[in-house]
Image (tube, rainbow, N blue to C red; front, side, top):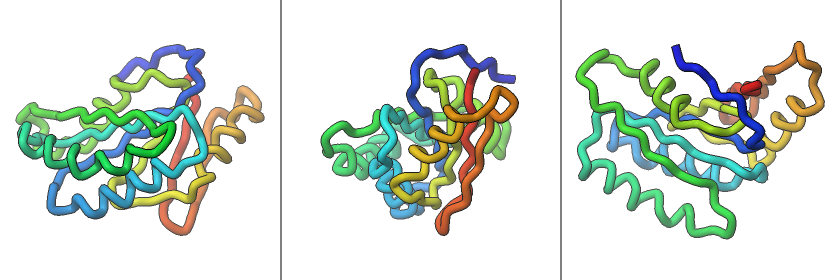
Length: 151
């Protein structure tokens, strides 16, 4: 179990799991949609499964042009290098959660995209919500995302 930090940091940590360099084009579209988010500050935690240093460098080089905009989101690449579990999907989510420091967290699959206002709307709902409603979900044409407040 991952212990979530208390945070006054109003940033959003977006955790994206990725496991196959052959799907780099899908990841590129996903990160493009995150770079285009109106909400800031935003931190993308790209959690990868058993990548070699060369694979990480190829992925980083492929994504670098997307981060050349003014006020880009932060990008961290976190590598799950352990042999177990064989299917590390849950481990990748936990790895991303451990890297997060912001007040909000979201999960997005590497082959999903979001409209530019998605996180701005969701965080706005959370900020206006009652203490009992600390979670918001929104369906867009491209993806279903869940956003939770870490209070």
